[in-house]
Image 1 (tube, rainbow, N blue to C red):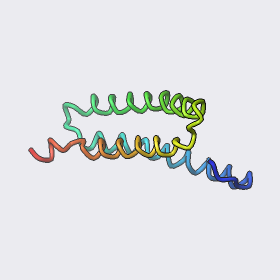
Image 2 (image 1 turned 180 degrees about the vertical axis):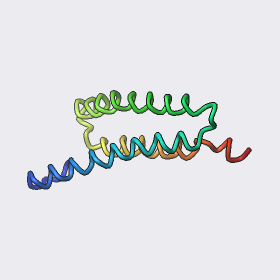
Image 3 (image 1 turned 90 degrees about the vertical axis):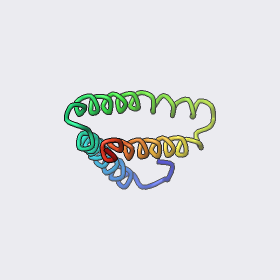
Image 4 (image 1 turned 60 degrees about the horizontal axis):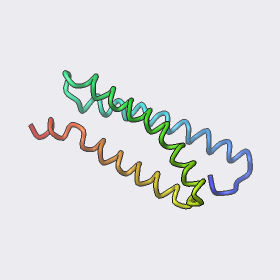
Length: 100
């Protein structure tokens, strides 16, 4: 959102970002449930949901702290590293089952 665009284009970008983020959230649930054993599936999806809710609270707080500390330039990097970590953790779900 650091790029200055016409208002109509900004609305379109925000709409599409929200649409893709919602779709990504449901795909994470599907991935975790698909890679979990039957006996562990509900717990795995519950933990995934809980971590998502934690991120929904912690992300804006962290962004606010970065802005407050005049480090808003680090915002993209911090959230990109978080997304990379989430990708690695999702990739590791079900590794034990696959190797068994």
